Length: 333
Image (cartoon, helix red, strand yellow):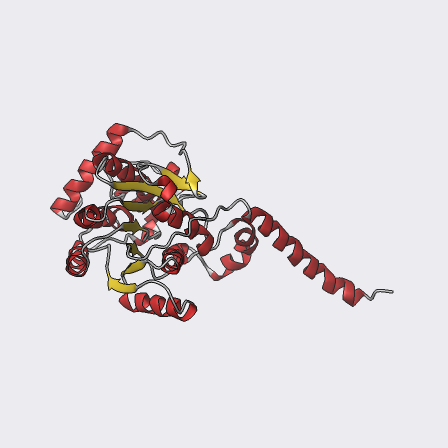
């Protein structure tokens, strides 16, 4: 006769096994980058490469013998990431930690000066870094831009513009802009791109299901990719956006309380990708030769994805021009 103790012990074990099988089944739909071409001699620049998807992307590229520039706000964390990779992977490409604060135009300019002094070309620029911060905190960049607008969009746009010469020297080269399917939740108000009205509502206690700052910045990423692809058509530089998917990273650390880890554990286990799984699409967009020459596309799960968002060419052009004006003036308009 089986004792009650054995039965009670078997129940949680069985539950864990079932959950594990469900996750394994779900992960079969999460594509992997099958391209494993040697990238020796190619230089990749990744913003925010010290953690999460950026770090996993760097690891994948280093395995393929690439030279990877870790463009990170915290240089010590960048060095730690490099040390971690070297500890895990004895051989591989070259890893170069460099300091870059996308919340400061001055930092971006100094960073580009150093890059141009040390490298004669950049083969692939991966605009990966991003922030998600509660609007009620009213955080701004050094120039006074709302933090999501300033870091996720304007900072990367300025960096990209300053690195175009090095990308042209490496043609065929690529620009990969990491966006999100949450761009469909974005709504641009050109009279208030700095979200003053939304921030006021957030401070008064009004809560939005999706962070308007983040969603808007992801929509701006999409428009930036599309506009830049048109501007660089036939230049030899491909510009594409991609979505890593719903990933378990520290991106939403400002919103997570200790009890969320308990409440969200089943959801995270069953529905969220790991950072490594999310990086697969980024690596695909940056390296797969099958999409070379294709520009202005959006990729998800290592395949082209047609967004349901009703992109407007006039809105795209207006955003690009307004963004250039803000970068040039170095202040919110």
